[in-house]
Image: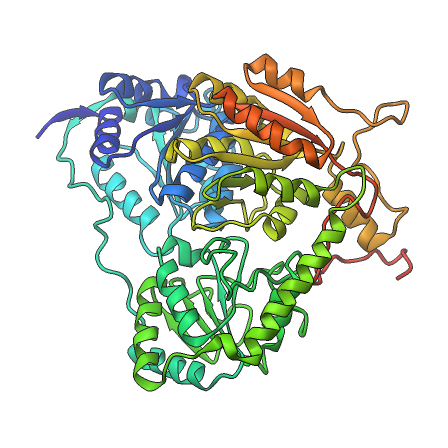
Length: 583
């Protein structure tokens, strides 16, 4: 058996598992690990903030389905990963996160950056709520088993991030160990659904007059897009997608019913609430999707009958009563469900049905409604999105962060392929865009990658433009500059009243709107940059950015006057109102 340090065991495992990069920042708490990376020539990507390391790994995995490894030092560096880990955890994105820790023989002494006043070397407890598993290794010979199990946990079942806490002496000391065979995708077969439940679901769908499918991110994680579209076409069932499910069906497919929820569309909302049977696959009925569970907004469950398919038993029936629960992998269950339907009924010629004509009319009406949002000057986010879509290839990967850009991008920026809409769903994270886009571009260098985010979000991780320049990763960053956290300002006005905005606009002491010069900022990093304020300028600006063959930033001045500053909300969202405000 080889005689290896803890750092070497990790380095060799990363190479054996064909993980192409480790992403992070060296520090005194991970010197032994980083030196092993040097010894075994493990490629490192240096980010400028540890949160960004997780977001980069997240973006890479959302495009490829394959995890990266993140490494940090002890203390602040480790704590900085929490936001990125939580973002990945809520959206079920696997990654390995290695954090440095105090020497085992120094546990509890309060050495530099140790958290120890309640329990020694206590950082793993910080991570516990936002990872699938957290391991604290105390001996070198534990590492082969820990790494093998960590990878299985990250990739198996409902995937997610896994944390491994590495004391400094464990990184540097050595032991005779046997490295296990690579885990890769060798995790056994897919979880099969109960055949009896699948037959029940098939019979229910066969009788349905207004069936609808609600597709979530689990369909993408399972690579079940083909099965989902085939099932929808067999039934003639409109497909509503969650934010994480966007892209499972091309958005110009006649059965795409777009979205429902507080930021959804009138198309998906009407289809969802008037369906007699809903087949929900790989989704958790989040509050925004379900209009905070207000009956008759997004859904009417009951009387609508729900078939819920998920690999996580905790999600089935969590937020709505279920007529037919099916625990299983989305790809497997959808394939078997189609076979069961083919045995008991024939394929519907949905193009001639009143239901399909209704769907088509809803889509036509919504497009006319959106057109109203694109008129006038200053230019709205909606107009810019329309022009960006026209200026970019069909296969473009779009990355968004929390805020108006995310909500409007979900509603109005069509995508046509799975894994081309990358957005933080459950944690709705600001600052996600730039680092996640770097990861996405590293995953698919031949495909254009664009970031769509507001100025408030961009400023949180804009330092990662340095990473993009350093590694020559030509992403296109579009900054929708509305001088503040305007999504929150508009929510204040929507819910509390037009005079209740407070603490959200970027203004100086004189009360004037303030903004950095984003063109100069981007150019100082070495990016191509320009600023525009009209929709008709988009095409030329995108062409200039693409022709620069380097990371590029386009600042877009957007309408900030309420309510032209935002898209339209079609559902309901539960925001409590203070008692002292009149309703």
